[in-house]
Length: 465
Image (cartoon, rainbow, N blue to C red; front, side):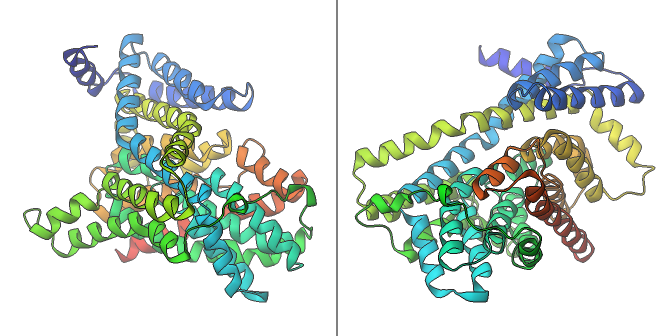
């Protein structure tokens, strides 16, 4: 495809693909989401295909020409992958380096050596939150499960007393803190400031993870008092290594991109002058791409080389890290295509028209939409992407801080009540050796607490900022 045809495609997609009335558009949105839900839940179709078909169905129900719908979907997919694809890839590389080098194990062992007794649940939530910063939720679970099971077994703890704090730390990072895919896509869709979103996300995450983790785990341990299943304690990656990175070097590498992005946000707020030399520098080093790239390059030495990796081993680690994220990139891209189809169909304007007469705050609306899609599809990422696309017009006139809070509200809603249509539900159930009822009473309730508590703190911040 020539550059001219790409420009024409983008220009066409920028125009409304249909002039349907609000009633027809409302029906089209419900029908499009219903198609996605049915394909994912009933036919067990991959979310990428379901989102693609749902986008085409949405356009058809809205009365758009097929060519226009395809143009909108393609433009949205391309812009979303261009915006967050590289960041997801860099995050995956950093996570793989952290796991394979034994850096994650080093952090875990160091913190556990300092904790015991009543402090153990707090240590677990701290470990999971640190580990969860650069890692996808599923990868974090695989890393944390051996630790959770070993600690519970050796210390004779209830599995829920140790496991719930770890799961809470991973889940909160996944739903609220970039560079995880959901928050990144929502930031892109709502044109929010990444540094401000990260800073506010940390503020919301700290009390949320305390309440949903160590505090709730007391009750979860009473409701489901089980011991760790012996057959689920796997070998830890670092057991095969002669040496591994130091705790300080590992922690510094994990936190490097966070520090750089927060520094950029702080300078932007304090200096607020794009021509200032300091701000020019922090805008570059604090951009998500450079911050994550710097962490990856530093990690090759502080993690890979420190573990004795050769150049070939490092190259192999990077290569292996990219294959598993292909599905995530496709889902995120298709979600962006669905979002653009919603926007070009005029759904955003429809929501704006309706919201003029609504008394419901935009933040609460974003949360409720994400909750509905999460309950229906089981996917936090799909819920975040779809809800962000629907409420994007509401962010147009928002301040920087409130646009960031809308991102967090959507992310909080995407975590609400994980149940049987969520892959994470079954992952937790099988690793912890629970039945469905026990998983609902622990994991599902914990996810709901995270969603509701986070939203409460988001609304509180909206009153203060």
